Length: 92
Image (cartoon, rainbow, N blue to C red; front, side):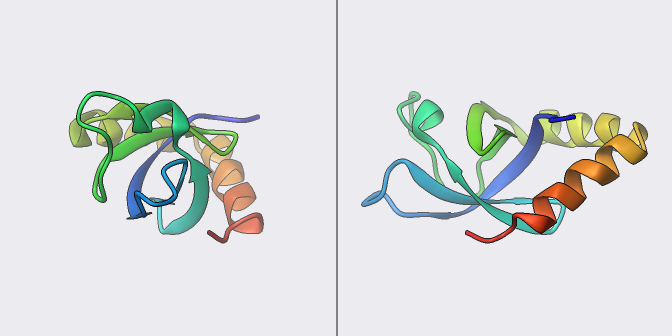
């Protein structure tokens, strides 16, 4: 199963506007941010995004990210499997 997971931007270089690194529950992963980088106000380190199959699909605020992550963690093994898949492919 591929879930959309909230991740926080930890590395972003405007010189490479489509690439960033997000952290999801302690795992850092390179993602394509082209879908959200052009949003009003752009993106910045510390922003939260919904990540699905290597793409930041939408921006979200910190409260929404926390609620989403809490809900997904309640799914138990489904969440654990997603995080393990992230770890296996981790690396910016």
